[in-house]
Image 1 (tube, rainbow over the protein chains, first blue to last red):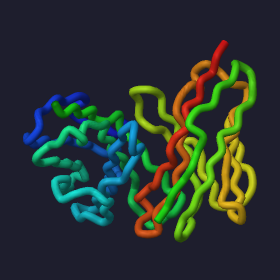
Image 2 (cartoon, each protein chain N blue to C red):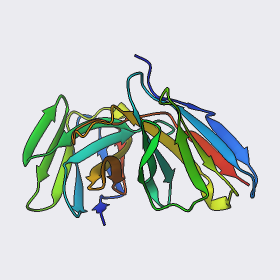
Image 3 (tube, chains in turn red, orange):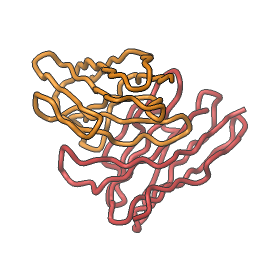
Length: 115
Length: 111
């Protein structure tokens, strides 16, 4: 079974631009979560989508948004990029059921550099 | 809110045993997970503890004490490939897919 894939793997943008990142979950998984990883703040939850609906949201500004398609693939968008948005963006997929011990499987991430 | 504290770095030699600690403060507790992340790689799931005690998976074991809000990951027979960052994580009470991660511990294994 193929793992979680993310595209692109690397991205360089300038301040003020916007960016769209893509995540394809493991087949059969309906939940996709997004995380931002930086040296200073560590791994932080952005939001989670399940069946095309945002089910959970972290404490990030409205410039960060996402969506999920009917095939469970998800995109996240960051508008008006700031230098502090430079980070590794990880997505994770799971079946999405109400099972506490359900494992999340992470993709390799998209490394975004904002200049 | 939730917060999890880990040592920033641990060093050990091949063949040794190392313990990585995690203390947490949470409003609602739904188990403690551990993830491994190699430089440039994705976090990969290692273990999950919902109840007190020790869970063993090969060379790795994880322990939880809910009364002490404390857990640890034990790595035995260390190998060079175990050099990586290790994160503990809890689920947020607002959603089981929302993981709150610890600060991470960088493990350096030397020959």
